Image (cartoon, rainbow, N blue to C red; front, side):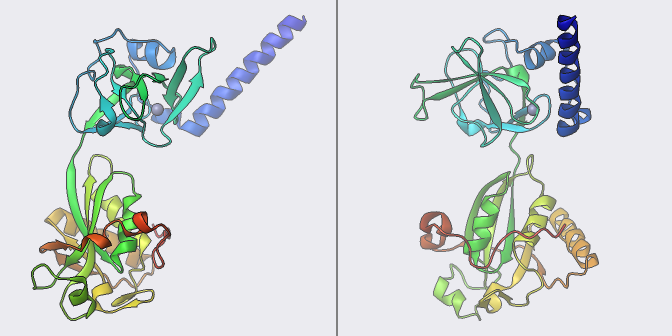
Length: 306
Ligand SMILES: [Zn+2]
């Protein structure tokens, strides 16, 4: 009898945990799996070595979870270990959870979002400087090739705009610089005078397969105050104005849509919308300013507006 009750209790706990899992993880949005994918991803199986489609893939891009679509690994962290499975020496921060195997010999890695089985992680093999090998089943992954695009935004002191945009997932690089004026290769001193026609701006290179231009633009409007005319916080002058330089008609259309959405929420947006012209990278000492010096921006922070 006691055995029977504890068996029923166990069943109740398992069902309750499953319901919680489905609610928390939006199971309905999970991708349907084939029998072989279920064997590996749900039942912790392993595909045969050298049979997975990503073992030798050298394309630039991102590897997502096959089951839930969460980004797990970047191609820049993939290396050839010769083991027969895709190998990475680090995951995208926070993307992977480690579980010690019950026998204590190996460490299993699962998707942090859906708990789908990925493979195992090993250290101490000295393959790369990071001395870590995520040995991942190809079948647990979906590869998305990089789709490199660029955008130019101006939202006050470029140190802060650069710092905030670097944090957004999908952003590959951000360069501080000047744009909008007529002079070639303007200097910081020239732009500081405020009558060069140049504005402090950043050029963003992003992977459009991971972050859309619309998402990037909305984020831009959330890290600076687009209602301030020719200033941003304590920085006053034409060179600190809020401006968005579109590179093609699609970017222009998206920017107009985002601005009109902000206006409908009551924001008196003064952001100038202009066609992109030559972007001049600023002096080296302005690049990655906060990353090098430490500290956080004095006039840029995230404020939810959408
Ligand atoms: Zn997942």
